[in-house]
Image (cartoon, rainbow, N blue to C red; front, side):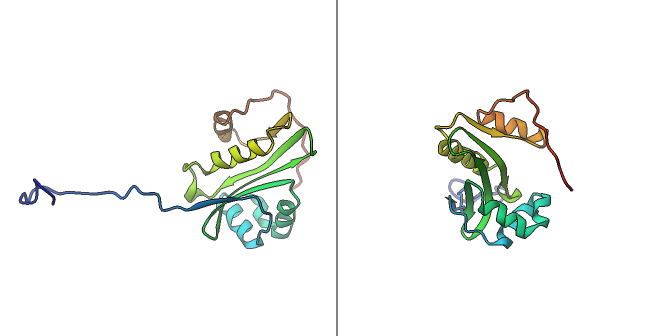
Length: 153
């Protein structure tokens, strides 16, 4: 115990370390190891993880990839496909569950928005409703036009 409680046996002093030990770095390189991508995609239960060769090829052929790293561990990723002038489509945004709610997704979105700041459109097609709130907080708006999709399983 610390003063003035050091002599009080019924007093219990407690502490919590609130320092942030994470040293998150963000990269725009596309040099990914297949196992890094598979581990990240598996962590969020995305089916793409079951196709490591195709996943690696897809990410490496994306127009823009921004990734988040904790040391050598891939913990977040966002990619986009674009027409080099007017429109960019965000395909993936994922953050490892152990790192969610720490601002990494928001930072990835901000980097992507900055990268495409001169484009007319930055589009995201959210597959699940539970992510809509996140994107609207990042200044995206809902477009009432419904895109068509062919999904092969």
